[in-house]
Image 1 (cartoon, rainbow, N blue to C red):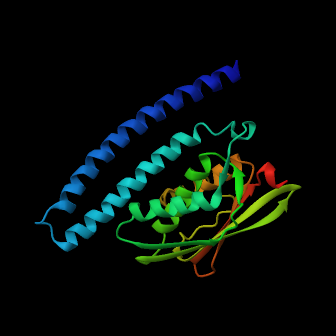
Image 2 (tube, rainbow, N blue to C red):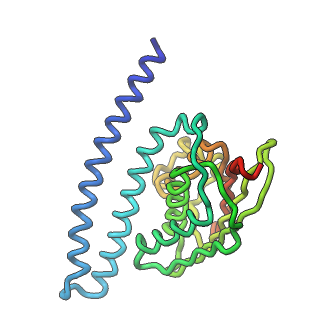
Image 3 (cartoon, rainbow, N blue to C red):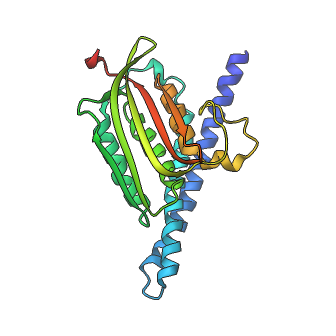
Length: 239
């Protein structure tokens, strides 16, 4: 009976999230339309356009966060499914291209040249969402208008599992002053504003865990700069 109640509650919550997400996306689209009118207006000054561009970036990224919330409602059984292999090098290059479209006021350079050509993982479209969210959050927390992100990969074995270790380095990130021992368990933080600031990182960590891997984070002592290490299970073709 308890299990049935839990499943019924989960189903109801999922429906509520779909409805809420739909309403938020509609509101975001309306606000974005007004901002695009400002950006296209000859009467708007450069300063006004600069702030409108930043506001538009916030709206676009918030839409992605809403989609992430909906995804989190359906990832409980990922590990039990056979997901198609994806090429991480190609996936990261696509995410980097999306970043520039989201943050028109930033100059973003994502160097993925050191990722091996055969870096494939069984993650399907979830890999796309994972890297979109993680890279987006890195840009949000970066202090400069020009942002450099370096990514490389190497083979590893963790707990007898052949895996890829993906290192993502950002030198100018301004991480919130908080200690996060487990990125998938930050609900104990008393400062909710800090949790919101790393919501994309939290999503990436939760997604990595659901895929049978994990996300590690090392912050520079002065809080400026961060290295993320994604450990993801290697495709069977590499075993």
